[in-house]
Structures are given as structure tokens and as C-alpha cells.
Length: 427
Image (cartoon, rainbow, N blue to C red; front, side, top):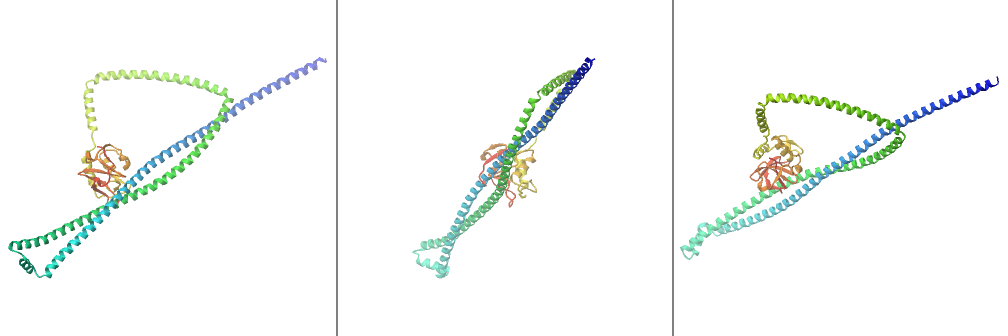
């Protein structure tokens, strides 16, 4: 009887032990599953943050690169404009020297004219003070040795008056010519001054843009550095989490392998169906080819004719030059491309060529590289004449048509009125 309670106690002890072991196993399993889930969630969050950081790095790097490219292009434009301003200032200095010389020539001619005029007046006054012309001739007759000497002196006196008169007219014409040359030089100087003012405004704008772009680059570089630090931190977290969930990655690899096999199988099936369809289509084409073999030559000839006709178009250089001259007198508008309402120099050439189906760059400094280069001695109507910050269209006989300045608009000018940097032929 005493053994039975001990047996029951043993049974109770064993049951309790089994319960504790089962409970402990369930706790461990639950803890392991929970830990794996938490790590997986943390990894997902870390990967999402890493993607965001990498996106920030990529975007910041692109912004830095874009800003640097924009600043480089702006600096190139600024360099071109500064070069144009320097050339224009050099031309203005040369024009100023010519104007100063013209003024000196004008003063010298005027002084010479006044001297000749005074000399003639003194001779006329002398004649009147010594009597009328009959007395003068009488005096010449009395002082002459003979009749031949008298005729020679009388002829010399008449020739002297005519010489004075002719010489005075020549100096007046020379003085007027010098004065007109001075006016023309002043007009050229005014036009150059307007162009310089326009380029100086563009220079100020470009310098402001460069300052803004430089500030953007500094800001983008700061963002880039911060984004790289974040990306490095999240990448480190992911590496640590990957070390804890290698089993999950193995399962994902197995799953991926199964999906890859399924995909290959699907591709093979699709390729097989496609091959059958292509084979069927090829058989149909071969059948149609036999029926249409007689018509292909005619179709080929028609297509060749259409291709030859479509390859035409455009216009000759003379047609371009003639068309451009239709707009003489129309206004100059900075940045404009309208041949009627207003355009600048490069907008004028751009729109004229566009009318004939030719595509050339928009700005004057880009147009200096379009088409192919030729020498000025070989220039033909329709060629683009390139100057420092300016372009025009050659129309022949040493003349160009161009959108000159806001004061003069579209007009014709001698091609060599400024230094020619390049002659470009597009046609």
C-alpha cells in the first residue's frame, strides 16, 4: 500500500516535467520565429532607407554634374561674349583714331580753303583798287614790251583767276568728302557702342547665373556628402542583418531558382510557339512571293522614283540671299526670330535658312561652326559671314544683309565693315 502513493507521485513528477519541457520548447520556437521576423522587418526598413539614401546620392551627384555642365556652358558663353566685347572695343578704338584723323584732315582742308579764298580776294581787291578791268589791261599794255608780251600777260592773268577758282572748288569738295567720311565713321562707332552695351548686359546676366550655379553646386555637394554618410550607415546595418538571416536568404535563393526554372520553361514554350508561327508565316510569304514576283520590279522602280523626288528640296545660295533681302527695313529685336516683327542677327539667319528647310544653330557663336568653312575670296551669295558676336548673309558684290542694331534694323552693309572671323557655307 505504501508503494502506490510513491508511484502516483512519480507519475505526477513525470507529467510535470513533460509539461515543462513542452512549454519550454514552444517558448523557444516562438522566440526564434519572432526574432527572425523582427530581423526581417528591420532589414526591410534598412533596405528601404538604403534605397532612399542611394537615390539621394544619385540625385545629388546628378545635380552636381548638371550644375557643373551648365556652369561650364555658361562660362563658355561668357568667354565668347567677353572676347566679342574686346574685339568690338578694339574696333571702336580704331574707328575713334580714324574719326580723329578725319577731323584733322577736315580742319586742314578748311584752313587751306580759307587761305586760297583770302588770296583770291586780295587779288580781286588789288584789281579794283587799281581801277577797272580796262585800266588793268591798259596798264598791262603799257608795261608790255610788245603785242606778244601783252597777250601773254593778259592770258596769264585770266588763267590765274581760273586756277584759283578751280583749286578752291577742289578743296571744298575734298573738305565735304572728309566731312562725310567723318559722319560715316561716327555712325559705325555708334553701332559698335550699341553692340558693346548689349554684350555687357549679357555679360552681367551670365555672371549672375554663374554665381547662382556656383551656390547650387556647393549646396548639392553638401547634400551629396550627407547622403553618402546615410547610405554607408544603412549599408552597415544591412550587412549585420544579413549575417543573422542567412537561412532566409538560402530559402529565397531556392525560391528564386525555382522561379528561374519556371521562367525558362515558359520562355522555351513561348519560343517554340513563335517558331511555329514564323514557319507558318514564311510559308505564306513564299506563296505570295511566287504570285507577286512579276509586280515587285514595278513597285521597286516606283519606290526609287519617289525616293529621288523626296530627296530634293532646299534652295540655292542665290535664292537664300534674294529671300533675305525682302526683309530690309524690318526691326531689330534682341532674342527675336521673326523676319517681319523683329529679330536679332542670329535669329535673322536662323529664320531665313529655316524657310528653305535648313536647320542651323540659333546663336551667332554656334553658327560660326555650322556648315563648312570657306575663304572670303571664295564667298558666294547665301554664305554666312561671321564677326565677333555678329552674323550676316552674303548677297554678293562685297555686301551682306543683316539685322544690324535696334537703331538701324535689317539693312545691307559692306561685308568688310568689320573684321571677318569666318565664312560658313550651309547650302
